[in-house]
Length: 208
Image 1 (cartoon, one colour):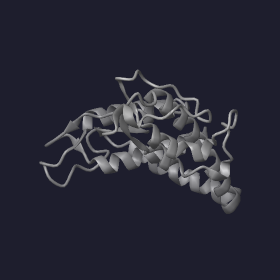
Image 2 (cartoon, helix red, strand yellow):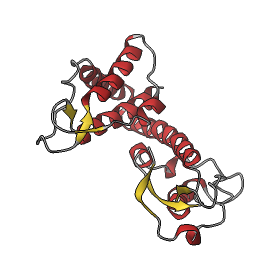
Image 3 (cartoon, rainbow, N blue to C red):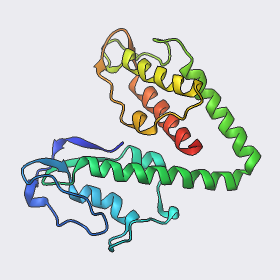
Image 4 (cartoon, rainbow, N blue to C red):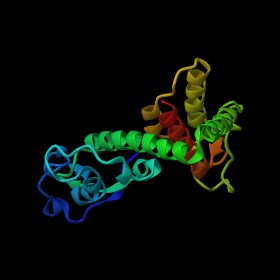
């Protein structure tokens, strides 16, 4: 999921640019903070083009889904509306995941692809089936910040329930998940949780 960096853009309104026809994204009010225009344009314009109506990228130019999901932007007064940027990137991520799956399936062949997906599903399902408090490792030190294990487990339980009901988990729910920072006991290591959720979103998008 795309996010704003913590540090505001020093250019402020002086760095604002005219809206790009190829993106068609709205701007926040001139004194409000949005995503920095130059950062968003640098990521999206090469994919969407700059001409009116040219908003359907060729699948061959799409990056890996994770590249889109983890994109971050500095803040700028009068910048792009974050919700609109996030929605546009989510749509591109969905397309990138489908395009990536098609390429891998063509390279591997149908049987090898199915076997690969079965193994990934088994790994993810096995992790989800672990008991609460034991799904992920704790940080190496009690003083190291991690994610609230309770909140991560709640998300895992929701996903597990949907899978057990033979329903596809909501990719947007997983992408938008936010966990409180925590220390000490009942904490999961951030990197391991993030990597798992990335893999889970990729699998959901591929199998959708």
